[in-house]
Amino acid sequence: MQQGKQFTSADRTEGPASGVSRLAAEVVARLVARDGADTAALREPLLVRLMEAVIAPDLRPLEGVRAEFRRARISAAEIADVYIPEVARRLGQCWTDDQLSFASVTMGTARLQAVLREIGTDWTADAHGAADGPGLLLLVPPGEQHTLGLMLLAGRLRRMGVSVCLRFAADPAAAAKLVSDGAFRGVLISVSGESRLAACSNLIKALKHSGNGSLLVAIGGAILDEAEEEMRSTGADLVTNDIDHVLRAMGIVIGNMPVLESS
Image (cartoon, rainbow, N blue to C red; front, side, top):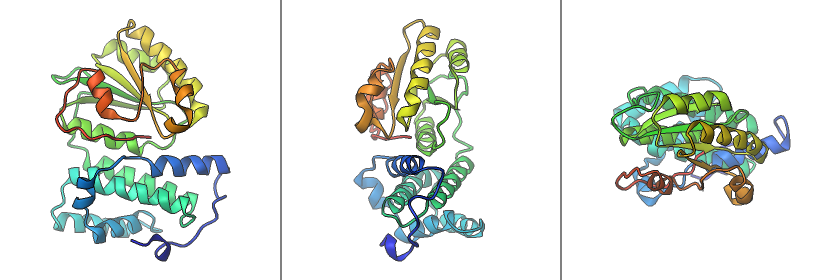
């Protein structure tokens, strides 16, 4: 798929500020570390139509693509694990290559999230973490706007038997109450900008206090390569984008768990 032939070049400065635009591109472009098996499963024509549909001016093309996926007998899990991450990656790459605007990438990502919510309604888990299987709390600190990567991760973990409680814009008091009321094996925090690390530090301090010091907290996100030391200073036990490593550290064993990177 040659992106330059399908999408009009856009002004990279569009949006509230260049820093915000850079952040959006970085988060979307690095949502998932994919493997060869996923790539082999893709049907390129359907992938292209899904990408075109999520940035279309109206929702009619997206309805048509949904029908195509049903006719092709592509499962909801495959859409979530393969097609949505790849479309998100390509949206971010198009922004990086100056082929899509900030507004188009933001709208496309929001529509991918809507599709994911719709197809994931049957992927249930106890919202408070007290299920027969291991429970995890997934948090996005206040101020974060790009949450697709964590939604993808939550859906996959639920299908693998992990009870997941997902909270966006979680303040320290609310997160601490979730921990004290639930039975979580650990907490995963996703952050995409250095400006949010102070909020993460306060969040982690509250989580640790509520968990009586025994709760493991992991932090990761798109800024890991650039701000690893700063992320370590938040007080998290683990600083990584390798979810397999996190699960092992928390005593959760799932066969053939892939490495994911979330925003």
